[in-house]
Length: 77
Image (cartoon, rainbow, N blue to C red):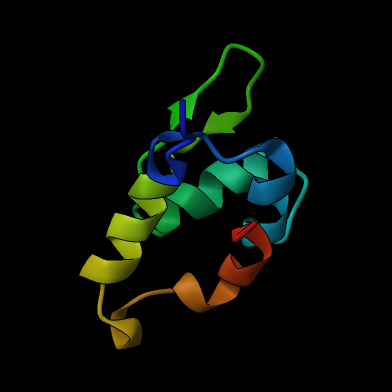
């Protein structure tokens, strides 16, 4: 079975690289500020589908977003 990147969750390392912080509280704040849907897990960390991030990046004009904070290249593996 081939792994479809769009259907997988970002790892904790990918979230840290994308958002620039290892803090689960700060990660959730940044996801909310950038209107990226997430699920807060029982352990307090956010779960985000890669496809969701891609949709937000495609739908939001660059001049109206804070996406430039993200290091998206770090999660392209």
